[in-house]
Image (tube, rainbow, N blue to C red):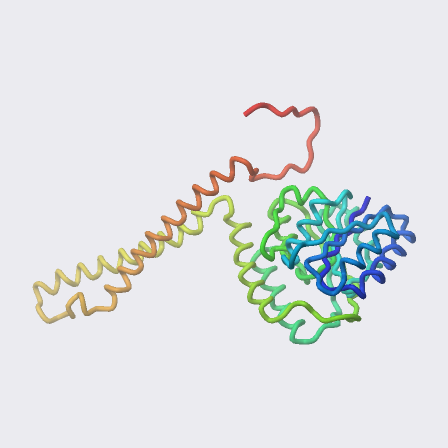
Length: 321
């Protein structure tokens, strides 16, 4: 069974065409498919279109949100209800070509756990393409997961990934990064990107601002999620040490000034005093925040594993804590 999760937001005209294309690929490659549409608060009649498709095809299922919660929420809800061992994600705007589905399966058979699509040739305006390429480079550079197109909506995952990767906010574009941090193997294949036929893009300039902030969050979660004090404490120690050195220097100059009146400005008139006190306070605050983060991590760690098991052999029985 292969599950296809399609988040939908005002894509009524596209849904029937997309399902027909998916069905044609499934028949050609002899695939057992299920298609799960997640209506993310559409207002154009998309839910009625999903109802009609589900009535005609028993492989089609649908979920409808009460309002627009965002793509990450739609994908997360879809992942909770899939039945297949492999999970595809597709956008509902027809720009992702379902003909690439067999190519994803070939890549998965080579041992990959996540396969991301790469739109080498994009049919989008330049003001979307250029910032996206800059963003993709930043994501790859900061996380070490080198993909050409982290934002591509067409991806394939092994279902077990979603027992360990939790989505919230707008982290859906970082699933390969979060999966790689758990030890899963990530790769990509080139796909055909098609021009938009209906409607308009749902993303604006704010997407890139939010994306950059989410990138910082993912970098922190993947690098220091289980040891936040290593980052916060290091910043705090460096800041505290800089403040302490500044205060020591001011103390020495004050002692010299006692024997040589007028050689130095009074301490309260020296900018270094303000900088040193600020550095001391910042250092103390960062280390305090680090300790609080460690307490939260330790508490949550009682129910969450900091490791990921690939496979096991023999009989493993659950033992009481």
